[in-house]
Each structure stands twice: as C-alpha cells, then as structure tokens.
Length: 76
Image (cartoon, rainbow, N blue to C red; front, side, top):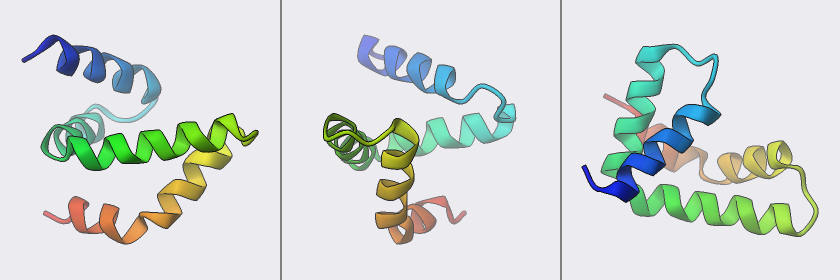
C-alpha cells in the first residue's frame, strides 16, 4: 500500500464515522478499484464548494449526477 493510498483510506474513514464497518470496507474497495472516477467526483465537489455550496449540497448534487455510474459500480 502506497503512502497516498494510506492517507486516502484514513481520510475516507474519518468521513464515514457512524457507517457500519462492512459498508466502510466495501466503499474503500470501490475507491481503490476506481480511483480516477472517485477523484473526478471529489474534484467536482470541491469546485461546487468553492462556488459557495455547502459540502452536503455539493456532495448530494454530484452524487445525483453520477447516480447511474455509482449504482453500476456497487452491483456485486
């Protein structure tokens, strides 16, 4: 595991407090398998936050826009 991967996992874990352990593991695996997709999502959220949206609003809007791709990734 590279140092960048380690820090990414730590950051994600801090954002997922209250999420069941099994769900956290599943999300971390998805991010590790599709880093470019999740990087794109993070960049879009940051862009919206800089334009004045709250983190929650930005996240929800970006997730809605990528809903089909996310559902496809989450299928077993």
